[in-house]
Length: 221
Length: 247
Image (tube, rainbow over all chains, first blue to last red; front, side):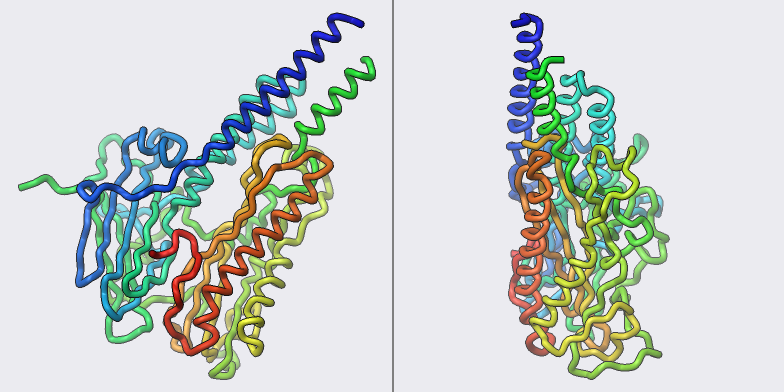
């Protein structure tokens, strides 16, 4: 038996096992459900039984715990939004496509698609290049796969925790995350608000309600 | 190269290139049809101010596909399902995620849009046998209920290797409007299927099974969501199993 050939096969087999275990280990760690911020940290607005609350998750540790990575470094701030319909007889429709962001200067933007946050698409390209160009360079492939798996964990958590359109009947609450672009250096979240419109249904004399929700609590007087 | 080396390399390739068998790729989505099929806003293109924040508090809600006045009115008690052509046209690539962009000329596209069309039609007609399925928004004028599904996401999340996790996910938004155009239901359901990517020998069967499971779940949740609305007068639906469902 050629000793070099035997060693080569052993190395290859070891790498395969390593890749499998690394990938499985990384892929088997989904992020936990978000229980909601503590009462003291959420900013609430109460309007005749409708309670809207926001919480800007800015701490990288918290983002890593619930989204699998630091989103702020990717230019994103996840904002938890909760809408509780405490009315007795009115149903409201909230459409995520109508939720917008308003900056103090009047700039109007929109929130981000989870796909644009996770960067999974870019990691896939990296993975393709690495795989095709390095058939014999298995360590590179391992890195590419680990990066892709990590991006996938983040993408899953972004999808699962996002805020979606709802029809809120009396007593119901809808909650989830809206993903905003992180403010630039000269801006702050304090100058940014989330604009949410609730439509009563069935249509009646009541009109739609639009709320401007602050993301940072105003300083105490 | 010895035969044992060759066999080992083939085994490596089989695991490595699990994706070389039928799968799907984000890039296979028709770009022109993504307006409705993937309507999540892009941060790079903020919408004009006129349709975003500046909406007055008294603004009336506008459904996405209002019936046109010139259309022949449907029966007042009818249920109309509008399936946008963007949904039906959708295709997934059966080619390898790894190799498709490089050399493949004909990748035997998976007509997932046609499958969606059939599933959605079957769902609504099972709830309301007299329902009409249209592919033009004008044809729904005068209907008691006008139902518009929007595919917010139809996607796979996968790695590169046979042992990597593979997840198929669909987010289906249902918008139901009454004869006056008022929205009576707006809710999103999610269908998903998870499993392993599989080897070159199993990935195709896995992909088909995951697609079926994903659609089965989405249709089952959609049925639970729509049944109270379609079966009776436009009344409030009971809490369905939805994405981040209201509690």
